[in-house]
Amino acid sequence: MREIRVKDIVLAVGLVTGFVFVISLAVFYSYLLLQSGDYCSCTETIPVVIIMVASLGLFVGSFSYYFLMEKIVLKYRQKKNLEKSLAPFLALLGKKERLVVQKLIESKRVSQAGLGASTGLARVQVTRVLQKLEEKNFVKRTRNGKTNTVELSSEIRQLFK
Image 1 (spheres, rainbow, N blue to C red):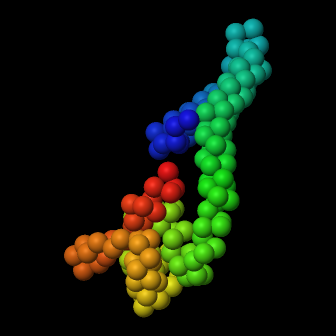
Image 2: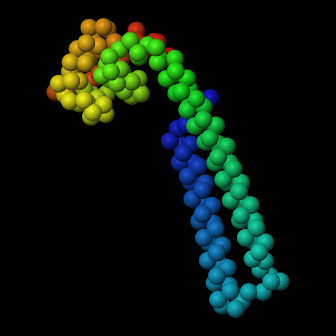
Image 3: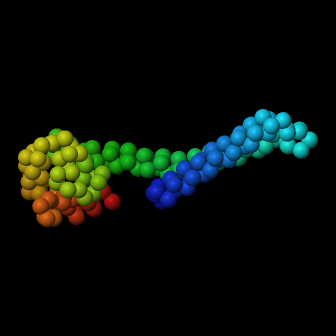
């Protein structure tokens, strides 16, 4: 199975938006016919048009659901399985170390400042936790201008593949 891409989501949103637009046009057209008094059931079958548009809506909704939900459920199950398999490994770390490693697993590479913001730890705490994790060869910091980029070491990253 492939991951959900932005293209997939845009396609589903486009289908639903197109459906809403068609419904709006049909309702507006029906309203104009009824207001002008030009409605004749022999030439314009509004109930049939409404049933056809509603059927189209069911098709679009079903298609969007089928198209996206399988991928969403699969990704959710993979994440839950990964969390269960990582629980014993992460239990070996301290609370703050565990929090930092979990964030790095989710985002793979992040700035040190961004890591502090996403974990809620102070800059000094993040620095100390990263020093401990570097000593254990869990993470690798790379100087990037005035900031550091943090990522899991290649050995630890291989565990999560």
